[in-house]
Length: 418
Ligand SMILES: *Cc1c(COP(=O)(O)O)cnc(C)c1O
Image (tube, rainbow, N blue to C red; front, top):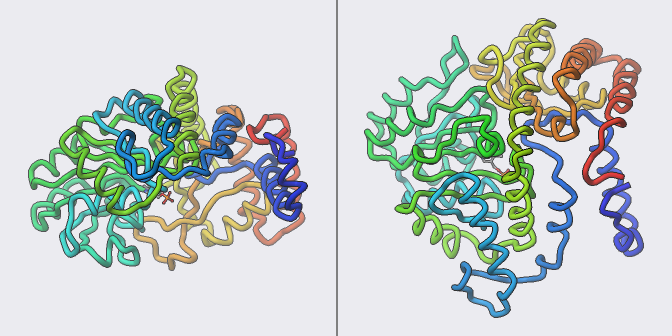
């Protein structure tokens, strides 16, 4: 059963309540390896479900356009203070509705339409909002894109430098959604400084690792840092922008009134709770355990003959290249899902296949680490992945694996399930 219990919802709208319960059960029974997902604490769930959702508060603490901010102001100030402490940043804006609007605020703050932005190409591991063509950021701005080296699968900093010198972007984004290796923030900062660009580090995926000391911090290198709050950071769905003192005002103005209206105060409260949790010493252990699990899972997959982009991982994320396995990423992800192992199909760098059925599967260990799985479990998970991909057409075998998966996960508590 969903925990906290949902008796009012069950009485008022049994149809929605049944779906919520079904999702809670699904999350409990599966090995969830989607690299951008996690399980939030029940404290975060409660803050998200609170009456703070009833309140409008356009503006910032002390400078609002609506009355009745006696409680909302301290809630937002608490979230901001904790964000600044956790990351050691001069300034934090906790109002962006999610990661994509947070990145849009960077464009709003430092670029005019048609100006040049540089980001990592989506198929190389970047995000849509780093200037990819189908995104507003690629349509309304002049976007130049860097990639990874074919031989290593790692970002090509020589290409980044050459492109930056030739194209003189106003903003350079580093970071992405499918980067299994450490991001070299000092190297990006050197290039950005040389060409006079603002460096925006998008740490959506790795924010929890940065907070927990398991990945170097961009603070002091990137003037602007954007992040979601719901991936490795383990908070509610939302986002934050951290800046140095010089770039604070431009970002605040871009978020409100530039792009958004009223902030989602229930989310702000839940972000404050999650940041409070991340300030506990135990969060550092969690962040390091995520990386240890990813390394162990990567090693176990390599042992079973899987090709991993860049040959392994430094963080929470593994990008499996299935080119040599005679199966596409999509049927592989579907087989894994049927076998109780949730992942997403993903392009790999220089992918010969089409984006809707690419060659890769992306895996991440943030959620299973929250459940309490350790490096000892990773060979078993690699075995299930191997079996499921071999048995992609064999529904009985996939169901057998799903039963084994549910059996294991039944022993590991899930916040949000009792
Ligand atoms: C997830 C992600 C985003 C977007 O976040 P949404 O909340 O889904 O809009 C932006 N940048 C990166 C690098 C991400 O991984």
